[in-house]
Amino acid sequence: MATLLSSTRPAPSLERIRQKLSRYAATRLADSSSLKHAAVALILRENAELLIIRRADQPKDPWSGHLGFPGGRLELTDLSPERAAVRETEEELGISLDRCARRLGALSEIRARSLNERLPLSIFPFVYELRESVPFQENADEVAKACWVPLAYFADKANRKTMPHPRDPRHIMACYPLGGRAFWGMSLAMLDELLF
Image 1 (cartoon, one colour):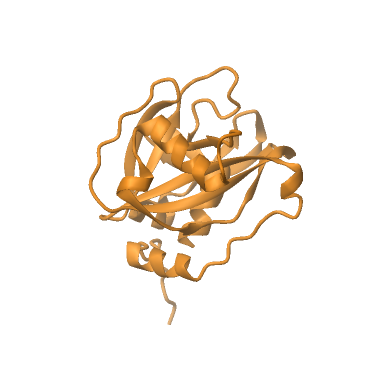
Image 2 (image 1 turned 120 degrees about the horizontal axis):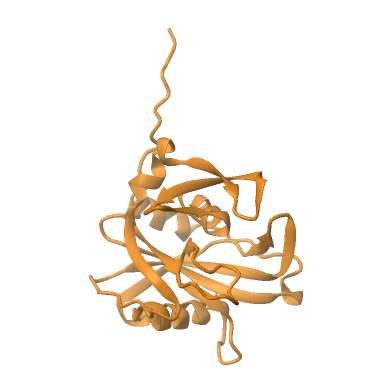
């Protein structure tokens, strides 16, 4: 007898994510010391939702207008990539992760790419869980919009689509449509590492 496969993966609960990250060994890139660094914060809240931002349109930002996570490049005053993620989250959304969240863990360092070209930049993703309900206020210079997306949306295989790369339509990318835009690329790779 044939078995029909469900198109929905089990929606990851916060408890499952906590357990995974408590024993997860994030990897570092072998050439990390020769790269510039950035860091992002994947922020979860109690009802299994993830905070997604749309970056403001900035001519000098290679990720201008993209969907992703709060974060940015390390500055000289940042003592670590994690401190950069915390600082950038507060600058971009007014959320103090030190005061209202707990760190669940880190994901693997990821090399920035532009199509097939590797860039001299890596990103450190850190995962946080809000301990309390806090409003966010988008800094319009950096964030055009922020919203909460249920993890169940990403667990449903029917929601995962493909799209041509914006700069090369021959290159097909996995994505999730969100609010008339697409969640794809490095942010999607981080999400996949977190959830699956």
